[in-house]
Amino acid sequence: MMGKKKDKSIDNNDAVCVRGPSVCSCGGQALMEGILMIGPKGECQVVRDPEGKLVIKEKAGEPLSKKNKFFKLPLVRGVVSLIDSLRRGMGALFDSAEVAMTEAEKEAEEEKKSKFDRWLENKMGDKAMGFFMGISVVLAVFLSIGLFMVLPLLVSNLVLPKTVPDIVKNLVEGLVRLLIFFGYMAGIAAMKDIRRVYMYHGAEHKTITCFEKGYELTVENVRPCTRFHPRCGTAFLFVVVAISILVTSIVPRFTDAQISNVVLKFLANLGVRLLLLPFIMGISYEFNRFCSKHENVVTKILRAPGLFMQRFTTREPDDSMIEVAIVALGKALAFEGIEVDYSRYLTEDNEPSEEGEVQDGDGGPAVNDSVSNVVNAAADASVSVAGAIDSAADAVNDTVTGQ
Image 1 (cartoon, rainbow, N blue to C red):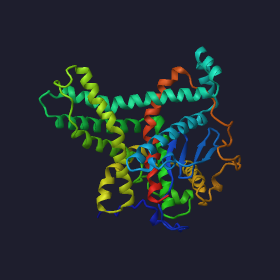
Image 2 (cartoon, rainbow, N blue to C red; image 1 turned 135 degrees about the horizontal axis):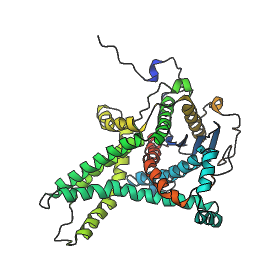
Image 3 (spheres, rainbow, N blue to C red; image 1 turned 120 degrees about the horizontal axis):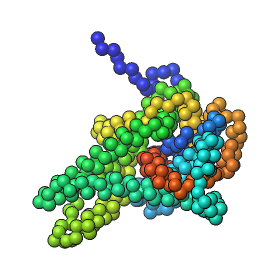
Image 4 (cartoon, helix red, strand yellow; image 1 turned 135 degrees about the vertical axis):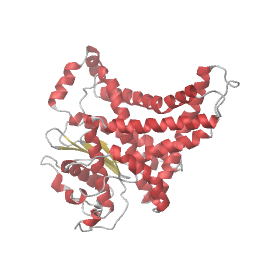
């Protein structure tokens, strides 16, 4: 006789509701040993340093998509939200990596600095960190374009004869892109260094789920919640890939009669795909928004692939990670006047601070990036793009609650 499958939902425990079920207005992003929670009125970044102390950075402010009427338009709002959250998310990621470093690691980085690194740091001061971060992000974007745009187009041109119809070439291109996406996600999930980031990703999802169910935010209540969330950025990425296949499949390619030069023809076809990318992202955002506002059999089926992909990008967190998520969400919700008791999870040194102040820190990250590490940072940045977009996709929550 088959045993009954265990339900991992919190609905089966003895937790007591402290509020009615609702949609959380905050979106989250996993960082290095921490979590960033972004809400419609403010954000909070919480990172646990090597000594176990919580370094908390919070700031009031509205997302860029809410500051201009044009940015609120359908299709436009999705692109704006993604760019804004990617900008904030990448900054938080670099900041968290700095906090999470041990003194030994910082000393090792200092010793590896070249004369040029030291000269640049002396000339630019605190701006050097932003300079290196900017280079890393630009390289990460180029790596992503090369992997998901250039390579699929190149493969479809090489493996198929010229006589094949464009729609077949485009579908093969899309299939290659989809295979690369799955391989990319599976490869990142297998990386030892990224495993803890995905554990924090799981903690973020569990905490938001617990809040949405109306339960008190405690480790005991959050722990049994599912780590899979329908508004995750991983699901958004899958939707982007799927919609890009549908859109590009009907886009004709330039022919030899139009452009005789092979290289120029390839660049022209690539340019069309890059121009379509904002449109594809906008459609993907609206698709996720629609699925978030409607709960039925159809939307559950549409969300299923994205939920499956979260098996790669989330891991079961430990209690210390859940504590970080609770504090981050509690402080982000405080900007909206929503009170959450997270005081039991604060470390002794966490005194109330002014908005934007870094607690238990020196007011900002020290500069320890070297030129030799920029390429490595770019690789790390490209790995973290999914995490940065995660908070942008979760920003759909704001529109669901009507804020």
